[in-house]
Image (cartoon, rainbow, N blue to C red):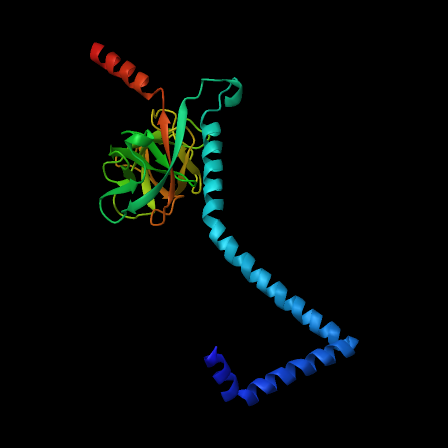
Amino acid sequence: MQRIINFILNYRNAVLYVVLTLVSLIITIRSHSYHQSKFFNSSKRLTGAVYGISHTVSSYFDLKKENKILVDENQQLRLQLFNLRKEGPLNEQPGKATYTVTHAQVIKNSYTSPRNYITINKGEKDGIAQDMGVITPLGILGIVENTSSHYATVQSVLNTKSNINAKIKNTNYFGSLVWDAQAYDVVQLVDIPRSASLTVGDTITTGAMSSIFPENIPIGVIQQYDLNQNQSSYTINVSLFNDMTNIKNTYVIKNKDREEIMELQKSTADVE
């Protein structure tokens, strides 16, 4: 208390000046309507600015929550899309869902080596297993190769070992999607017969012959194409929809019929 009194005594002239200034301002504002309107308009602008800043700050901290809501909605929409059947929507056919979709985030991503891998933050305890397909909101990303309890590694489409069934959209021309390790934004679609009609800019999607990915998941667009040495099929450069250098949210797809399909194919091969 004594310090406060000493402070006032030491700066009494300045304190007196501030007090008299405030008193004069109050008297002036109260006695003139023009000054009152100016004061209240200024106070409203100040209050509005404070509320605006407060809203901006609170919105920033709400972004994570909003993003989580959008990701969950996207997951549900993809689940519905992948399980659409000719007989009707999924919600009209209980128990007929073929695919499940699990959201995961990338915690490590490589794209500069011949064999690139991506690590995601979901593993065996989340139902993730080897040979499940992985996509992003923009398109195909790769296939799960190894798993631990809480994490999984994904063989990227930017991997020289990668080989995924793909096709030209809205046609039945199928081929294999591979990578020549030349560019991180371009992959190759091979074994497309020369009878196929191609146009630069045509969309490439996943094919129906894969037991890993649903059909028609976007991959990219035709950038360039040439006939192979035998002049029997095309080698197509495909510009990826995904920016492989900037990936965060992914969706892991499980085909619940895959095991049955693989067993049937194995038994057929054994007979032959």
